[in-house]
Image (cartoon, rainbow over all chains, first blue to last red; front, side, top):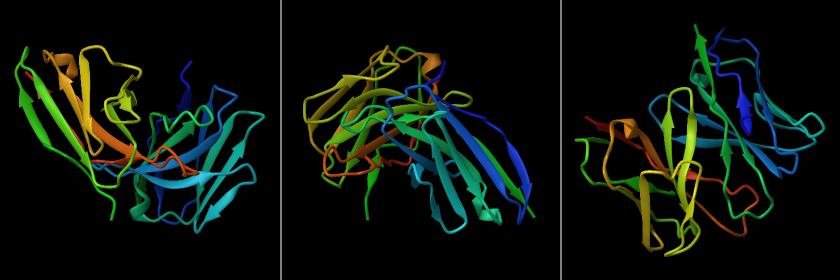
Length: 112
Length: 115
């Protein structure tokens, strides 16, 4: 079983749609969680951290369910510029010094 | 503005050649990483380093070696390139301490083709 699993998509949605991505992780001792965004032919960049209480950044909402070892990302009112691959990322062990585990990514395509 | 640079965007090498990929960061980060990214497989960690002259194997170190002689520079070496090493190679760096996210900053990548 992969340490971090995501539905690879692609998700094809119209502008203005709400779309949700899910991610599961296998190590119950994992400490912190993130979503990174990778545009086509570009490098990944941190989008947002994911906290147990859930957190929101504009149109983006991230949720963590430790009991189910499940992370989600919700994008409301999708824009064309949201088209990218979204990587679920886990810091597996406290203070391991920064080694992160990346999911394979979920591709999103927002159409006019 | 944080910056991670890689020596080449595109590289074409022949089977059996020795290949050097260079990465430089200007953020005084302790951690540096080399990944390869392939369709359907995502980012896979090859090696990482948390200090000068220190290195640790990642998930797929076979066929690769690394060198970190200076804090800002991390080199990936393919001792004898093979066609199955054709891939996108991404370098990243991050702080080792005093960071809540261990955010990794990536370079633009090197697309290596081995023929």
